[in-house]
Length: 547
Ligand code: F6P
Figure 1 (cartoon, rainbow, N blue to C red):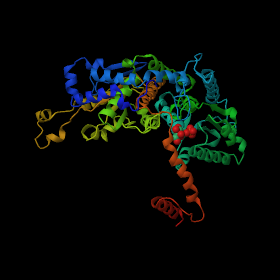
Figure 2: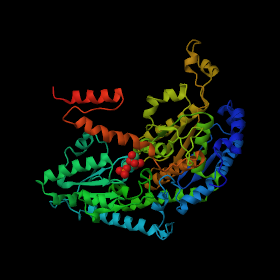
Figure 3: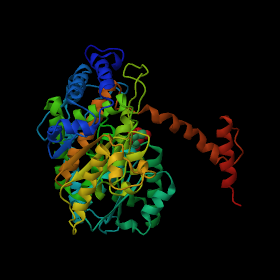
Figure 4: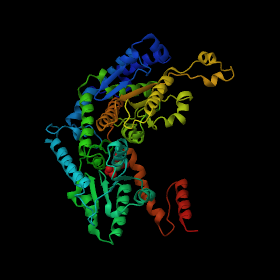
């Protein structure tokens, strides 16, 4: 980044935003809309298949201009170029960040260490297509000659959340004669429940792990292996027909016993939470078929190109990222609710939790200094309208400011009676209610008695953005995920953090490795933790003993 300052709070745009915030903080959305009838149409932007309405954020033209200046002063333009060029912008791991290469069209070029990585991406895609076609047609058979009917992805984090989210999101396009399962948790229940009733001779396991060393995934994979071999009376040769791997680590794949011919490769320049469109998407491709998968990639690429080439004032990921900064760093919002009004997106909030929080949940800047401002907010959510009947109460009348991202589709994939119009009416109404609320006068005008009226007042002025598309197709899902990826990137650049490492997950992993033998030991272990940890280990040991 050019002309770096010590902290973003020293940037002129930041200082000006602080002054501006003091002026605008008391502004009501009601007034902003009343004073500017064109606002609802003007404060929108469109790219690929997505339409973003950000008019219900507490911003005016000055705010937007200052935020755009903040992006410029933060060096966002040069960082975007650096990412697409393959520079090692993941500085703590000394890696390029090139999930955009995963969806680069055949024939394009992205050079890493002197080598064009795009042909390699397409070679793996071709291998995936070939395998998927053989599997879906029944040409690839299990060890006993039966057709594969069940696919279980074993992975965790980015090696699970992307596949499971995409499977759910694109279920409409899925091969219904096959079943798909996802095992991630080290809790044995996950594997047991996923495998109940499955015929091992018709089941394929995809062991998905970038490192192929992750405790949860390797433990589940070993359990699956034993389950399979047991069904084949101990014949280990069955493994080759029922296990494939997705990894960057050929050595570990082979020592697990999976033929590397059945390994689908990806690269260290793909972060786990940015990998659903790499070979990690193998289960997705099996489910929706190669053609739909390629459409998904195309959707990602459309948003990449938009992000790379569009001026910031019309750039969806940049606008979304900046509005997030405005709400977090100036209005003090600590969370963002992601509210997809589509049942198929029921795992999207969980997916976005990893994408956003593992990327931007950091208090150290790229220079190793401690930030003196807030970074990544907490993401959470549920599909609408279910949330309306549980936590929306707090969003409307609680004491916390919860900005919302509403996601909706004009056309349903499953049109049934009036359901879809009712669904759309609900989401549009929620955004309206949050923004404009209901005043005491309006409540009283409804004839509500004085004592009850305060309870029925809605302050409003709760910011939200609406992301609207025609229909949830593979390409639109690609648009949507790339939109969030690049908005996370935008924020990470402004916050001056490395959005692509995840050192914060390491300590717990290391401590667990120390505790496992203490729990399993046949003898009372000599415990040297704090008194609470020692006590919990002792309690668990005691409770584990048969009565
Ligand atoms: O522990 C965090 C993490 O490293 C994530 O970043 C990653 O997506 C997940 O674990 C799984 O890692 P792997 O694909 O190497 O098994």
